[in-house]
Image (cartoon, rainbow, N blue to C red; front, side, top):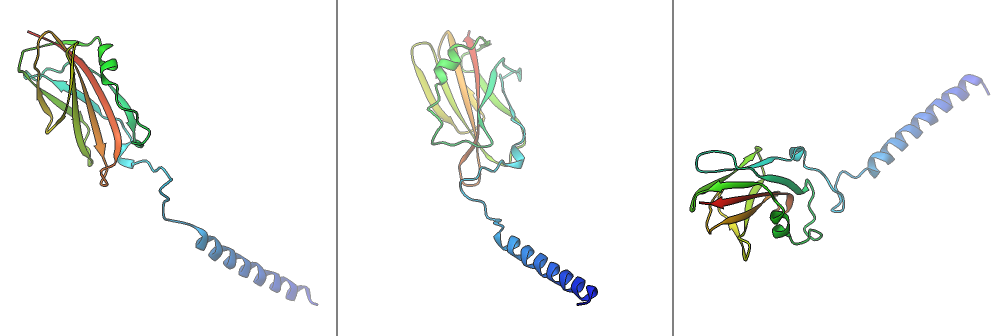
Length: 171
């Protein structure tokens, strides 16, 4: 056989193998994400800052931390032990009885955001879901607060939780 005929046949076989391999690999790729895969929300690259402001628009001294961010498995998140975390807070602010505080989120979020308020007065605690970003301080003496800010995706699944702790001394 002529060497040119053999070269042409090898090139034709290589081309056929390339196309077969290409279509085989394209057919095997899976563009659908499995429910087991964790995909970070590209809009949640930074953990937002949560601040508390008093009625004079002065920022209260507070400490914030992420409980979970960009993927929160509600099944493995333990109940939040807010009281233990807040009691160790040394951030003490002064506030007037009945003063309105405002929660400020320094982040433009396309996600649903909700706030839960935990209040501790040393002998009892309360928990409430806030309807908006404001609440009033009540009680007497030193009051500790924990605010849990939740970020929910379009399926109402938690994709981030931030806890902000602060204390006030009522006058």
